[in-house]
Length: 501
View (cartoon, rainbow, N blue to C red):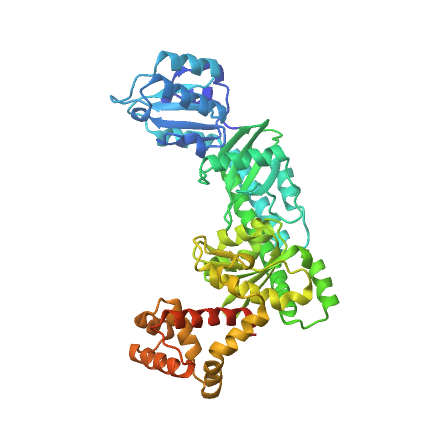
C-alpha cells in the first residue's frame, strides 16, 4: 500500500513538519509529485504527495483554500511546501480548511531537497511499482491477444476486470462509444463527459477528473485522429494511477487502429458498390438490394460531390462517419470525391469538419430510386460547381442559382450542343483542350496569367487558344453577353456529362 504521510514525517532525514490536516496523516502515498503549476491536480490521479515550491503558493486566502479543496477532491495524499524567504504566509483560514478536510500540509525546510523526499517515497513503494509493472504487462498481453484474434471482442471488459472499475472509450465531441462491440455507457455519464470536455475547449490535461451528475471518474486522452477519450468510473477500490491509465489509453489507440483496418476493407467494398450504382452495372433490383444492405435505402439518401479539401481528412473520412453511426459509400473519381449519405445536415457536417472549410460540397436531390443514380451524379456535379459562388462553399442542387434558366437535363444538353458543340467537336478531332482552357479562363475571372499557371502553358499560348476559341464558337470573350452564354453552357455541360471512369 506504500508509506503513509505519518511514516514520512517520522523519517528524520526528511525533516518534514506537520502544519495542518493532522486527521489525514494515515493517508497512503503512492508517489511524490513536484509541480509549480497553478492546477497541478489535473495531472494527478490520487494518492500523490504534491511537493510545491513555497513561493508559488497563492498569497490570498481564497486561492489557497481553492487549491486545498481541489487537491482534496482529487484524492491527493498531502501537500509539501518547500519554504524559502519568499514563501507567502499560509493563512489561518486555509489552515482551518486543511484541518476540516484532513489534508496534511507538510513544511520542508529550505535546505531539504524534493529529490530526497521523492526517493524515499519511491523506495517505500517498490512493491507497488512491481504491481504497476505487472499490470502494464497484462495490458499489453491483452492487446497482443486482440491483434492475433481480431474477431474476439470484449477487450474493454477485460481491462475493466483488471483495473477493478468500468471503462468506456468515447468520442470526445458526441460521447458515442467508438469501439465496435462495446456497450454504450449511461446517458448521464456521456453527457457529463461531453460537457466537461466542451467547457475546456477540447484541451485535456494529463487526467481530467469527473465529478458531475452522480458520477466520479477519470478522463484521459487517447491517441487517435478524432477526439477520443478513455473514461474510468464505478471504481471498486482505489482509482487506477496515471501511469497505468496512460498505458491503457495507448492500448486503446492500438485497438482503434486495428478497427480502422477492418473499416478500410469495408470502405473499399463500398466504393465498388457506389461505382456499380453510378454506372448502373447491375440491375436496378440488385442495386436496390445492395443499398438496403448498406443501410442506404434510395428514398432516404442523397449523392454528395466534394472538390478539394484536406487529403488527410479524406483518408480518415470513413472512420469519422462510422464513429457517428452514419451509413455511407465513398468513391473518388475524376478529381471528385462522391459520397452516398443519408439525407440531412448531420452527415454533411461530418464531411465539412473532416475535409475542412476549403472543400466545395454539392448535394443532389434525393436519390429516390437506384436507377436515378446517373442523374444524381449530374446534379451533385452541378451543385459542387455552384458551391464556389456560395459563402458557405456548399450548395444543394435544388438551390443552385444557375438552375433557374434551365428546366431539365435535356434542355441543358441543347444549350451545350448549340454553344459548345463546334468547340467540343474540334477538341475531339484534333486532340486539343480548348474547352478546358475556356472553363479555366472564365473560372479565374479572365486572368490570362492565372489560367496559364493552372493549365501549365505559357501566357502567349493561352492568348492563342482564346483567339481560336472565339473563332470556333463565333463568340467574343470581351462581350459580357457572349461570356455569360459560354459560362452557362459550360455549367450545363457539368450537368449532362457523367464523370470519367
